[in-house]
Amino acid sequence: MNQDDSNDKTYSLLDIEKKLQDAMDAIESIKKGRSISIGGESASKKYDELKKQFDQKSADYTKLDKQFQQLTQEVLELRQEKMMFEKFTTLTEDEKSEMEKTRDEMKQKYETERQTALEQEQEKMFMAKSLEVETKEKEKAKTKYYKAIIISVLTIVVVTGGYSLLFAELVGQQYSVPTQPTPGAYTIQNLRGDTIDTYLSWRLVDGTPLVINILNADKFDDDVIETVKKTILSDEVLEIDNSLLHKGPKGTTSSLYVGWQGAMTEAAKTETLLYIPVNFDIISSKTGEGDITIELSKNSNADGYAGWTNSIADASQNQILKSRITIFDVDNLSLTALETVTRHELGHALGLAHSTDPEDLMYPIIETNFPYTSECDIDAIVLLYDGGETSQVICEN
Image (cartoon, rainbow, N blue to C red; front, side, top):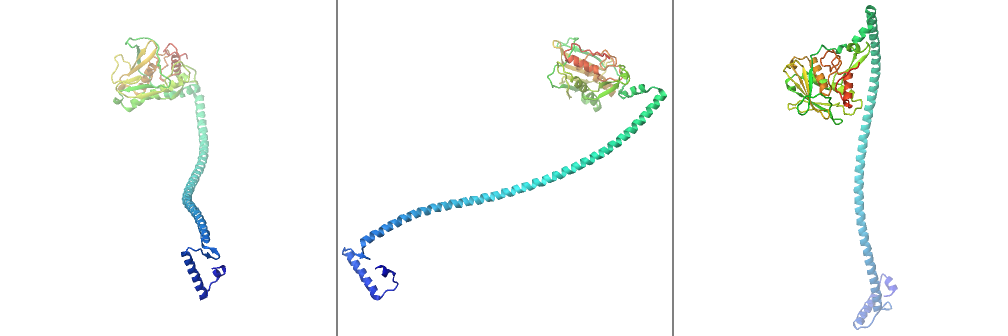
């Protein structure tokens, strides 16, 4: 079969018979071992060429197959990446939505707080304005009040000529109390129980509180216990005209302290060698714990004392180890008397002896109408805790 024959699409019957005959002859020749030719070339040569082409095509196919498998793997990886990307995109969108939601909430919260702040600022401005108006009104009323007082005082001065005396009686007169019962005495004992005479102070680490135990608290009314606590914990300061204290001219004042905590805090403002106790912890126990115990007794003292303080001391160090205060006949003491006796005895428990001044709280017999802790009591505390070798209260004024 030549090139022209291969391009013909219709053949005559003779051509077909001839080709069939050529094919039969070729078969016979092959059977007989003779070589045949196809298109002018021997069959074996043609076979070799075809085989070579087949092998080349097979190699190409194998190569293409490897490339196809590689491409298939890449496609799979790309699909996985696509799936992961789509998942990541979905997560990102969710996070974005959450962030937008959070942002909107924060924005709303900020707006709410801003609105609240504006309202508070407006309210503050309004209140400040109202306070300013009210202050002005009060100032006007105060001015009128003072004018009325001045007119009244001037009238009294004209009538009596005693303005300075009136002024002296006004400053602190309301804190005057009736003459008090004699608090009693105090004793100092060493560890063997011997009565000794020495100066004493507490030796505490800085910041350590003194523990005060009120014994028998459950046997008395609350107002009794509150009165005792007041003499310990109050930090109230009273300004009393010195003419009432018989220690200075009219119109000058002295500071007196209602509670020992306020007095000791004032004393501690001066730097001292030893730590001055400024904090007091109050407990109520039946077993005697504490640095200082205050026993409230319904019994009377045989010598007629209202109070008694006994301190146990380390005489070698002039150190208080424990103090016990007894307040006698509590049921028959007024609250004012109870306050005075307790305040006096606490002075002993903190290290003070008696005073040389009849107008002072620590005088052996209470003669003053102002039985509060005085400035000279504070000076004595400062001296004692700064290494001074005396517990006596000496008032120079």
